[in-house]
Image (cartoon, rainbow, N blue to C red; front, side):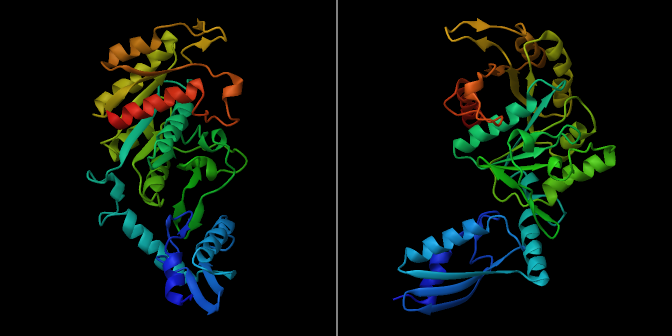
Length: 348
């Protein structure tokens, strides 16, 4: 026999797909009525037009039918302004300490920060970021990306998402793609308009991505830095002193020479350099021959100058190995390189 108690207990396993918390814990379940095996109820959404409403409906129906409901009549409502403010305050309490800084930045938070940087644009820094993040997620880790390349934001386009972050008052819920949560300036510009800001505004937005975003529980937060050693790189070094860095270059000696500046800055700011990723290292023909289109030695030269190792050599991808976005299939040659890199990072 169905009761309100076992209906509510069943719904404790249904999560809001954006906040990743139980709809019961979030007080979203209202007006439960039972008539034999027929259940009617209301689920109050955080905002009107919640993009994942259909997912919530399916999960509620599945949970109730699993305990014997034969018919589920579900209506949706929307939280009042006061309820939304209370929810925002609760999320902020979970995310931010008494000093107004994100709890994830505390030494014992368990979150590992990895900044991906390069000396110049066009070497595949963002490709490395999203494929390393995806590889970590495939290995069961909870992963986020901050697209801190404010001027050259590309993560949403490269991950082929048109979705925007859900805003609950002043708190943003990251977009999730391939198991990775992402925040980017690209979500907030219209028609690919350029961002024309100087230092203080850049600092404010990077801080926003950390303080006013509900990341939930993370194991890794990857930060896609702009190329070079400008304001954003300096701000991130100050905000996240415990971050580790990966330096991306191509095999071309000029690219590695320029990248050494970014590496030296990491060392100067006392960030540990995890190593060098040499992207576009070679092109492999069907008969197994490796063609070094951009030359050889750039990654090794950079690693020697920074007293670290080349931790991955990423080949050019064959077109059929690419899934349409810049995320590579885990069974492809490139996908396997990133899986190995992710495993090395996890178990090092």
